[in-house]
Image (tube, rainbow, N blue to C red; front, side, top):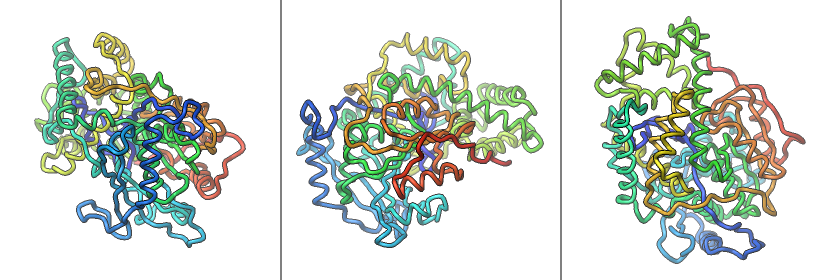
Length: 531
């Protein structure tokens, strides 16, 4: 699974026929530290990154009004940054990365540089970040006075040499098979789809695949920093963007000025990426139950049952009905999971998902079909959705070694599905292309503090489904001097975008002054959604 609110579409379908959204997390590769004093001397990629950054610093960015079809009006401006496809060969093939920005809203004296954003994925675009200023998002008003807001499409995403694994209209076609297998034949069919998807990635995007790694994206981030004319990077990463930040901080510790990571991927090499996905299945089940409890508490509004057990029964009935005969001919269990999983992801989805569910139970099937079925007429959205899933798969599969034995996948997911059925098999099929991945798989970076890394601010809710809380604790241990802000008894994915003064004020203070609390902080949860 994968991503973060501004860019996420709840349509990403695991190629293999499971729909699992845009929010997991994602990858890494071994690269010795890029610090100048690296004991083993700079490796080829680190040298390549330094060469590319020096060129970018010289070239700068030619900011222009954004192309009309990108959807970003003035005063947001767009530009390009050129990076090597392969940092080991900085003079070889180049690709262009799309970037956008809006200048700081305060005075020249107030300006502290550029704040670069990544919303997650892998496969998410950060290009909407400057709209937080144009939309006058009150949470970011003070920070916007001091910083230019900079977004970018990571390599392979959107306008940045986009990759693809399957024809987009084919990708969104519904109904897909029920992710929960009823027989060995069902499993064989899903395995075949996953292998075909991996082959499709090689066929459609072969030359990019070996270079679709988190360390390469971290190197790209450093080239963007240089192109912006910034000596050091100010960075905000959410979800997978936290792993990108963790890898950047490991490879370029001396290049970090301020770094906030929000909703943290567990950076342990053992977790990237197979184990991280299994951990996610457990956390999703927990957050699904939180949502069902809330629905039950608001039974007067939703009429779905006044206990969690009753709400779950309604869900299982809906699932069974759609399995027997897909709603509107297109919404089966896979499509339902893709729609309903946004509730455990984001509190902002609690009301809309419960409302649609409630309408269905009251006899309005069409509302649910409209919400959960793909829109085949939205070709641009479907291209973006397929691209996002392709990047997710490419980065996670290339970053790390995955089990190749089907027996292991089958055993682990069968076991987990018993107690955590909501997401387990859907997530498994989404990731299974990694078992037959056609490109070299790397060893993840050993994330840790090196000389020069400043205090990093870590923000996390305890019930997060997409990036379980342990990830924040693990990164906190690895980044010496970091500070952890815990939002207790909350579980929305992506905390810094929500209204919670205990968190918002500390994020502002850190970005504006560099200051953190003397010790880790626990905040009470943000307001629960009201129906």
